[in-house]
Length: 240
Image (cartoon, rainbow, N blue to C red; front, side, top):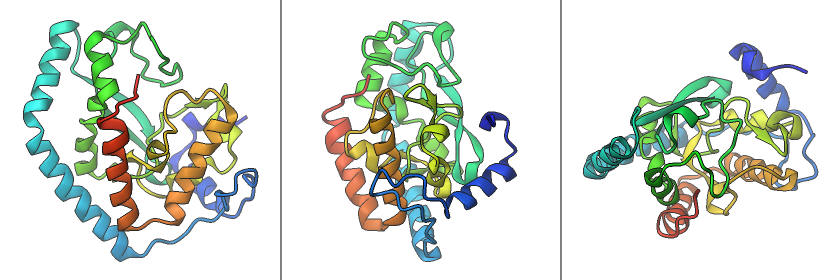
């Protein structure tokens, strides 16, 4: 078994390209095993929208960001931000920022020990941040840096497991989802596919949604996903 955590980025990018010709996910109709080419103009438009919206959001939400930081430090000692290594576009490893929602000595930088309902590691402030998804707001910095997009396949931790095994073992075409930049939100989240990846069917459904997004990307689809995220996740927060 190959440990993808130690795999050189060039080798992983080769795997992503080869996966485009694979047919290992025919159990899910939306996974066609194709690695589409997105027109450069669409990608340019997407990047410009990311920059404008992320910059505006950071400025508009500055009081909220400050209040979150103060609340985190007031309740428990430790850093305000939580940093984690995750998969970026093309299999590149990136550092992703979140507001810390757990006690410092219980944080899991590997992402292997997934959060569950009633998780004792989560602070009271952290529970609010996760339910409202405010813990994700620092990822706007990742968007400005160019590591992430506002919308795209959700950014997974390196070594993340699904149904007890590595995601790429459960879903052979897993790394095809890294053909585009990861997003703060995505189609899977708008469909309600969030939370622990404890079942194979639910885990595959997430990847199906990710690849459907890549294969059918458009500015209008991004807009619909952002509206759906505001409706389902911010105003009806279901995170834990």
